[in-house]
Amino acid sequence: MGEKIKIHCSHTELRDPTSLVEHPRNYNTHPAEQIRLLAKIIKHQGWRNPITVSKRSGFVVKGHGRLAAAMLLKTEKVPVDVQDYKDEASEVADMIADNRIAELAEADQDALKDLLVDEVFNDFDLEVTGYDPKMLIDWDNEENTSDSENYSRKIEAPIYEPKEKKQPQINELYDSQKQADLTEKIEKSKAPEELKDFLKAAATRHCVFKYDRIAEYYSHADPEIQDLMEQSALVIIDFDKAIENGFVKLSDEIANLYAKQK
Image 1: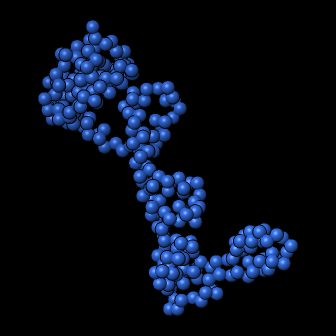
Image 2 (image 1 turned 120 degrees about the vertical axis):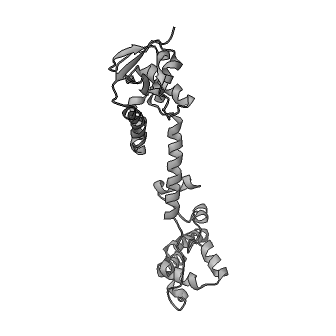
Image 3 (image 1 turned 90 degrees about the horizontal axis):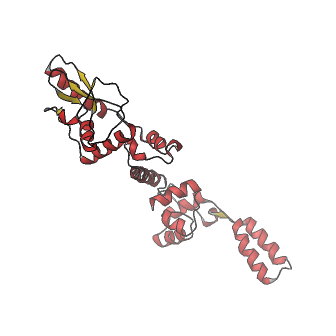
């Protein structure tokens, strides 16, 4: 004895699914996985749509997938809506339109994802919606790839090209006056020598680098000097190395995006 499925939809009669004849001009195919999923949905929801049969030809016009699902479930009766068609063209056109109109819909993937992860679906078999939960993971991976591509464009290192004919003088690259004043005070203090060394090292943080002038100087320098300036983090050519060496600190949001890129 087959499955007894509750019927919620309007219909003109109930028929044995084995008595129904698929339309010979139906061009749609239904993979086994689709039929399995549709059968699961019908078993859970009951019949929400009937199978449409043409009164003039006796063929199924709409609901070929539902018919296949009913056969899989071995249901004894299915709801059938028998409809009139004035001619074969109208009958076939309705069958084609039923398939085509659904194909023209465009899903908002973000809205769909938000809906599928809504708390209303807690402890609910998400497959009954027609979507495999694994698809959410696939979508996340696609988003991550997109984010990484977008982020890659944002973190392109600058290109250092000379803007002036002459290379800046060294004294134009930094201002060490505050460092010098503080170092002098440290030297005159009664602090132990070991502590003085520490404080003088800390005083170097008061050296102000003028990065626009440094960039100009770098653009005129030979490769050996450029390499030393890069290692000193005076300019950044390679973000990977800069982050690895602790020269660059990213905000949490940007850091997370950068991590996805790696």
